[in-house]
Amino acid sequence: MIQAQTLLKVVDNSGAKLVRCIKIKKGKRSAGVGDILLVSVKALRPRYGRRVRLKMNKSEVHQGVIVQTRKLHRSKSGVGSSFGCNSVALISSQDKPLGTRISATLPTRLRSFKWAKLVAMARKTV
Image 1 (cartoon, helix red, strand yellow):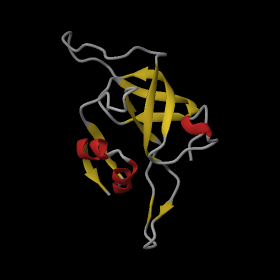
Image 2 (tube, helix red, strand yellow):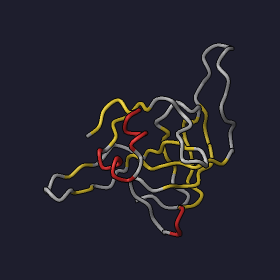
Image 3 (cartoon, one colour):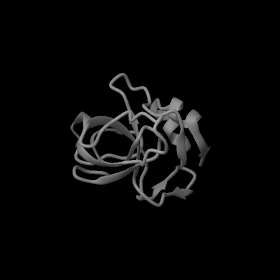
Image 4 (cartoon, one colour):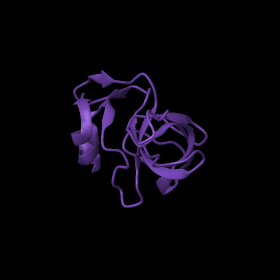
């Protein structure tokens, strides 16, 4: 479960590497997979070459969707799944992804939370 002031890893190629949760949308105290957060960029990915243009700067505020959590989630069939770290994918205000690729394994239950576009961009789903 994610709450305010939690550090999260960014799994897309939007340019951010590490973000901090500022607020959870819909007034909840904690958030799980598929919930929308307001995040602040804390660290950026290094640029390789001069032609790479940054899409964002440090301390900018963006929205993000939680795609991985360390908390164990059990499905109705009894199979549990958890991930190694808490991760987020950044989205625009129109709920479109900022990156073009996701470099992590995503849970398939994201598809039922209206995030089928993120699952299609991912390398693998579990």
